[in-house]
Amino acid sequence: MANTKSIHGEWSSRFAYILAATGSAVGLGNIWKFPYITGENGGGAFVLVYLACVVAIGIPIMIAETMMGRRGRQSPINTLATLSTEANANSNWHFLGWMGVIAGMLILSYYSVIAGWANAYVFKAIFGGFSADALEVKASFDEFIASPVKLVFWHTVFMIATMSVVMRGVKSGLEKAVQLLMPTLLFLLLLLVAYAMTTGEAYFKGLSFLFSPDFSEIDGDAVLTAMGHAFFTLGLGMGAIMVYGSYLPSGVSIAKTSLYIAGADTVVALLAGIAIFPLVFANGLEPGSGPGLIFQTLPIAFGNMTGGWLFGILFFVLLVFAALTSSISLIEPVVAWLVENKGYTRVKASIVSGTATWALGVSVALSFNVWSDFTIFGKTIFNFLDYLTANLMLPIGGFCIAVFAAWIMHEKHVKEELGLPEQQYAIWKFLASYVAPASVFLVFLHVVGVF
Ligand code: PHE
Image 1 (tube, rainbow, N blue to C red):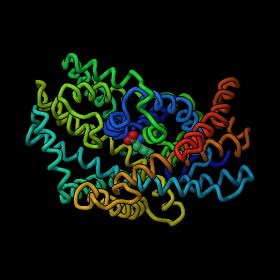
Image 2: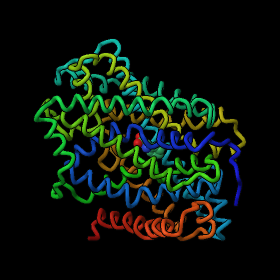
Image 3: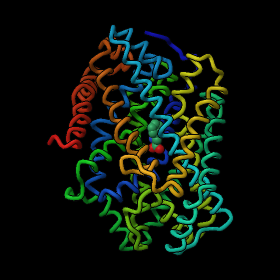
């Protein structure tokens, strides 16, 4: 066994790890992104592809990534260096760690801007309450994102919050916050689902949009988006779950915990979809309205329901917290590396990496208003970074992780870390060696038009 403990500390229990890793998985991806990309990509068929990717690609790779983290016990870059030495493999594998570190910062730069929207909506909820009228709700959202000052301000607030949590390290604060947050978030989502049921016919329209697949609605790019989203929502392919795995006490079952985490993540996404699409149809909104979708729908529900003022505040507070428990995992890989290799304190490492990420995030905030005409490969800065990370970097990272775990590492070491009965091990091994990498590869070939 390499090291038995990370220098950065360790989760206090198996349960604490599950909460933290679920916190990393459940975030804006589930509540903000899943509904709007499902809306943009025609609904049911997209959802099915996404679910298939979670099962066939996501779960095996989550197991692989966590396993590598726990064995390496360091930041992803150094973990890959250590593990490739252990496997007598090429040391260039550590560049995979670098790609992850960079992907994490790129994702956080726009993640923080959107989390800032949620943060702003907490205050909108407190001071204005939400209007019950769909047009007013939309107008208020449009007015909000047209303001560069507001977007940059809330982005800054969120980045400061992220850095302050990360500075404190693995255990304090983080673990406790998540314990309270997850159950409350689930409760509020169920409440929104119950509200959605009151929309009558629209409720069934919403369900059928989500769950009756029409494959003529999706093309190669939609399949790529669904696959990329499976990585994004589970937090895979960039070292977040690897670094969390490095703080995992030995002896905890990686396969079992991965199943819980993926299950919880999927349930939250589906509930968000079930809550949102009935509102979309009941109010004559476009399912494909893009990143503003939840900000243009959920306020209507809060504006209409009894107690909506309080629930609206609570919901957006929880959304901010859900985003925070993900954002800290996005920046933890680079922070851990700065501490290990540059000798920085956690405080300094958080400030340096956070400031760089913040600066990039400012350009994302501006891409929604003053720089909306500036494009890279035909995409705004926000769309470009989202596509580059979620659709390309995470699947490529995940592909390499599967290959490393299944083909490069010594099987004896993998078995030792996973501790699975022979038959279950064989299933994982098959998925990680063949199914997951081949699926990623085929989707890429399809997108570039090879078949
Ligand atoms: N999984 C998070 C979400 O759904 C985002 C994330 C992506 C976190 C990649 C870590 C790594 O919001």
